[in-house]
Length: 468
Image 1 (cartoon, rainbow, N blue to C red):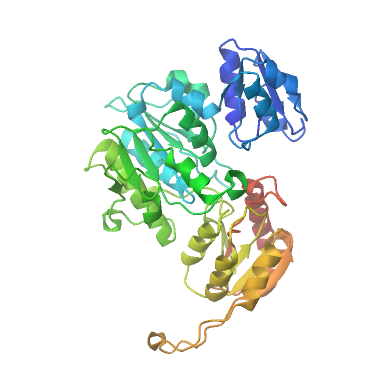
Image 2: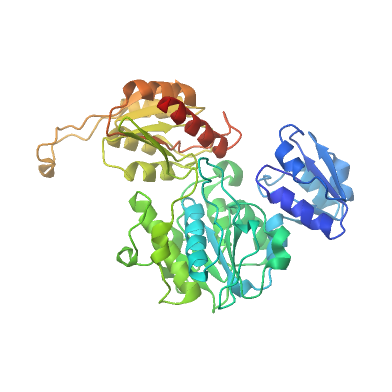
């Protein structure tokens, strides 16, 4: 149920068909919208397609229903399968069931930074093991994540290989026979995935939580339900396992009865290529996981060579003294705030807004109005953000430490643009040398784009058109 565009549906369909199952793939999207995924199923016998619709009888007569993790609870087709006594699972549940060793797994979750921390761990372990290939990074000249599992890992002299998967990159199920008992598997796990893993009572050996803040409330219904899904990451660990808190909020969803390993001291880290204090914290969290896996003397120097992920504060160009950054993966207010804080005050022109996930956007709007030089809003939440930003007034009184800085500080120029194309046009007219243009919407993309990748790609294309 749910072929999707990100590889998980393709991976599990091929995995089952190659083991002799009769597989029906059903998706509400049509063949044109899923053309890339459908093409990856060609030549694999035993797979039938039902696209553009669901049929209740498919769900009540199958032996096993594999559900895409983004399907919301209470879906009527899933309820029909449950009523018929059908076994229900997911791609990630099948993967962990077939992994050779739970003791060689690292699971990473959180509201912000989990993809970056996962990729930092993967990048560093790959370098330490002397393993060729890439963790999911931006392709040269593009913004589409690559799959690190494209090649069978070359074993180091210690016999260990590395695999990175889960919510980042494609499915690892297709390579399950290549994963050795000494290999490390690093999994980015979303709250949707963790809901299913709770049923299997499975937790990784090393559980990493970056932070917790309101997110996906449209899916989970309430903050407590969302936090409870994250809590499943470490809920089934034993005393020999490790839990790592990347922040104070992360500690709140980890097991308070067991010791928590804090992130490495920032002073222990090499100089990073990525901007922003939040990326230093991400690296410290990744370093704690690396040390938990390899020991306190693990080599952290490879972190310096980590160039970042596509759509996550990704530098995409510099023109006429202006730098442009694609942070389209920023789908929460907290992530957008971190992007703003990565640059000096009054140096950022930021694009905010998108579809409504139920988050309170007013604090972000006020923070952007105070810290940015320009705000350009778009999407379903754009007007609400603009209204709060336009009404913002800086606090009264001149602080003693402001020196020669004008007080009150200037508030951001606010432009209600509606679309990304209009926002780029307005930015082109307003921007000045020395400034930073950042797409960090703080909202999901679904009102105007199929996904955050499409939104980020549109931004990158717009930046390139500015240059020409």
